[in-house]
Structures are given as structure tokens and as C-alpha cells.
Length: 381
Image 1 (cartoon, rainbow, N blue to C red):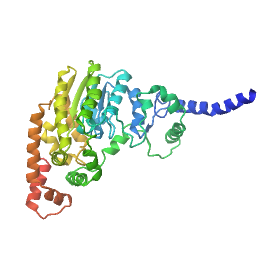
Image 2 (image 1 turned 45 degrees about the horizontal axis):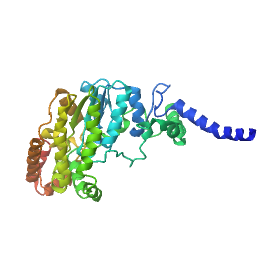
Image 3 (image 1 turned 30 degrees about the horizontal axis):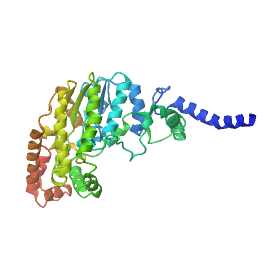
Image 4 (image 1 turned 90 degrees about the horizontal axis):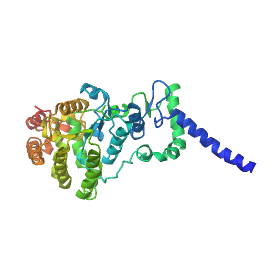
């Protein structure tokens, strides 16, 4: 019996020591804030965000996919939001965004959700999460009973604890850690913006087999999947939280993105139209306001704002947030938006046919007169 007890102790002691160490350091702030000044933050936001939300307990959160990452802390403060937090993830699905909203609700002080809803994120199955960057940490979001097994007794988090302490106190260099909780968001928005980059991305997307497979996948853009996703991850939380103010906005992609969808991906374009109609109906809820920035050519026609056909810069984020704060660009009918968007797409194709766009991206001057007219239009002149 004594031998068995010794074996049990020998087995359990390392586990207990590991659990105590991870709990004490708590590199992801799952159980408590750091006990030392100057906390450090892990680069993978899907792992870091739950602890950060709990630590900050914001009264306003900004939610969305990668297009919403420019809405950083200084942008929120400049627009008048004092206790706000950007909780967006790159490539996040609508279900992930709802899980993050739920964390904000659990933190106890949430009063307002500013939610950027993209046509591409609505078109996923209602329980879809992103796992292309690694396994999604459900135990940090919707399965808290797993935290003992998957956090305190996982050697990976013991190693993470060691690296956090080494970075904070021993001067270890490690790209995975930063003193800035928005380091990952800042890295994603510190790229080069402008007409040339955006046009180059336009042709890259046209020629991408991966994009063609994804956007021609009938399961990926099924109307029944889209509606179920919308009902589960948007309508249900709004209905369940009548005291929370939801400011929902449709972030603008560039005119090149929309022209590409309209010409090459009619099923996707149809779902975009459906989303406009569905979001207009959201305003029947007294706690919801919807803003549509496809009713603002000022945003989507100027390619100087974009680093590719989808992602705009921080200055644009501030302008959008100021418009939301002021109540500008409240959503109109889908027919109104589509009519004006089609007019702008037609104007783009007349002034900037693909051969002229290629000249601009390659800095050629074969057709200089047409080229200059195109550039003038795409810088917003």
C-alpha cells in the first residue's frame, strides 16, 4: 500500500506543481490579473482576449473580423469612447464574434456593442470557428469546466508561463509577447496602403484558385446556412439582451471588391443583397441601430484608404466611428444601396477597365490620359 501511495504521489506531485505554477503566473489571465506591474500579452488574440476582457470589463466593445481591427484604443478614445475595447479577430466567424460578445456580457459592465458585420462572415455555418491558426480554445469561451484539464494541467501552458516570466523579468526576446495588448492589431494595420497595392490585390484575387474554390462553393454560400447563422448569432443575442445597445455597421470593402463579386460571383452578390435586407429589418428592435457604409461612396471609392481590396486604414476607422457616433449613414433599403453601388461599379468599368488598372499597378504609361482619369477617380477626386 505504501508503495502504491508513493507511486500515486510521484505521479500527482508534478501535475500539482504544474497546475500551481500555471495558476500563479496565469499567462492568459484566465483566473486573475498579473500580480506584477506591467503585464505582458500573448500574440494569439483568440487565447489572450478572454482574460483581457475579464481584466478590463469594458462598457463598450467593438466586434468584428479583420476589417474591424483598425478600431484601436486611441481611435475609440478620439471618438469619445472612454472604457472601450476592440475585441475583433482576424478571420473571425460570426459564432466567434458572438462568443466574444458573451464574454463582454459576463464581465459585468457592458452597455454597448459596436458590431461590424461583413457579408463574408455571415456566410458560415452557425457553429463555425476558425482553426487555421491552431485549435480554437473553446475552454476559454463556452466550456469553462475544461479549464482545469486544458489549461492548468497542459504542459504547453507551463511553457507559456515560463516564456511570459522570461520576457517580463529576464529580458528574453520573443515575438509572441508584448507589453501592448493591441500589438497584434497594430501589426495587422501597419502595412502599406494605397492604389497600387489595392489594384495588385484585385488581380491576385481574380487569379487565385483558392478564392475561386471558396466563393464558388455552394455549401459556403448556401442561403439556408446564411439565414441560420444570422438567426443564431445575431438575432438571438439581440433579442436576449434588450438592455444592451447594439450599433451594427456594415464596414465598406473597396469598389474593386464589390465589382469583382458582382461580375464573377453572383451567388455571393445575392447573399450580400440578402444581408442588406436582413440588417434593415434589425432596426425593428428598439436597442438596435444599423449603419451602412455602402451608402457612402466617399469610403469605398477611394483606394488610398485600402491596403488590399477589403481592408481600410486607421484614419478611415476613426471617420466611420465618428459617423456612427453622430448617427450618420443609417441603413436605407437594400434596393437603394444596390442601385447606387451598381452605378459606381459601372462608372469604374468605364473609366478604369482592367487593362488600365493593370497599367496603374505596373506603373506603365501606355494610355496616360485614361490612366490619369482612373487615378483621379480612385483617389476620390
